[in-house]
Amino acid sequence: MGSQQVIWAPWRMSYILNGDKKSRRNQCLFCQLAAEDNDRENLILYRGEHAYILMNRFPYNNGHLLIIPYVHTDDLNALHPEEYRELTELFRRSIAALKEALRADGFNGGINLGKIAGAGIDTHLHFHLVPRWQGDYNFMPVIAETKVMPQHLQQTYEHLQQYFTKERMAC
Image (cartoon, rainbow, N blue to C red):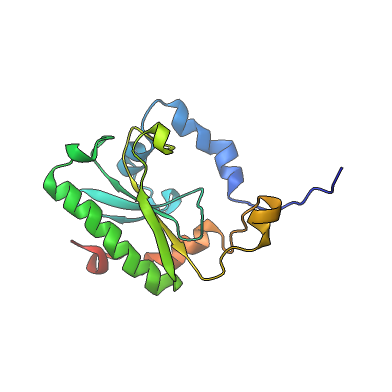
């Protein structure tokens, strides 16, 4: 047997102790987070009129965002034009904010429509925006199948807040 490597992820403990309660309520996680008044704990960076920006609690990369309409639907065509416009405008403005805040060199972005397309939450559509940097992959994902996150989620949230103000993001 090989020796096991340990990578500390202290934010996972709150999920282990508390996070699963949300899914047991049979309520959509995105609808529940939008209805709560606890943006810092829920990692909501910005609230618009028709959509909001949420940091992914289980990110592919530091600064991984979700842009989510308030309306509960899995159908992009069900959005009213103003909802769709704000959703895509927040996606565009988030790119500019992450370029400035995290000096991202590029981005992966898009939407997974349906469980078969890879949507983890398939009943409420949402866009993913993942910042990328030159050389952001090293041997860990390839050899150890492990991703190392360079900063705690709450520290990233605190840093990003100043880039997601009403003045910068309002559509």
